[in-house]
Length: 317
Image 1 (cartoon, rainbow, N blue to C red):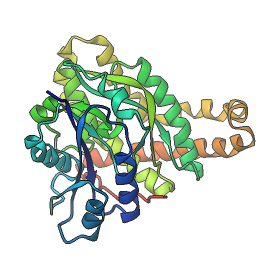
Image 2 (cartoon, rainbow, N blue to C red):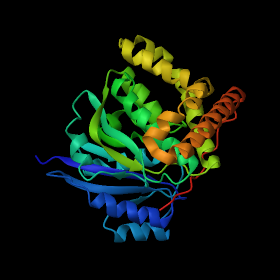
Image 3 (tube, helix red, strand yellow):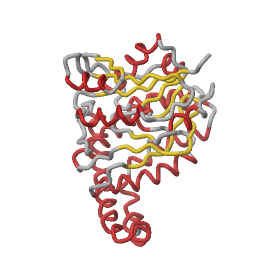
């Protein structure tokens, strides 16, 4: 029987039409090899939205949900239910700004086995045009290294190729602010693995301080929600995973502690980026300070049980 893969792109009502059209064209150009495939955009809006019509003109399917229930997690869950008739073996999840390399699907699909719930690659920034975006670009280099050595591999947004059966059985938590980290924690605690494949996927970084702050505050808040799984993580029997998970939920909340290393990094940044190293250096200082403020703000909101608002991010095409 021919293997099938479904591509899911959750789409908020805030996504610009240009970004969606470029996304559809890029994903259709990927190499799917011998896979029978379908590309589905799970759209929060309704059938009357002009963006739905534009996407269909690009030759992709659109599930108009007419609801924002569960936001990104709800869109993916609805897409999984919608795809049952297609009966895919694998699912690839991307965001509207994701630009995977041409052979991304084939590289990752080959790593998904029975005990592997996801396979993905390192990330690279596609829009390094501002100080904060350049700092995030450097951050992605560090994350790429950590993904190789960490026992808790959490790919942002679950962007990668996943086992359809695991997604269908366990689903995404629609009440979790960071559904990707929530799902990753549950899967690792159950003994499943995340595999790092060769290659990369390009995605947009926040380009303004406001967008960066809002994104990271939401991520920090979502991380605090993960402590509810402590009773599942500790008995998992995988000390490498437990140590990495605990480190991710503690050390990353105090980036100001690493500011001295940032201040001493100018020579290395000049060697890496040339004269642009000064700009990256300034961006890294701004990055560290903004992260710390976002972390403290998220902790304060968490203690007050106030939640965090999900805000749209500015796209740069």
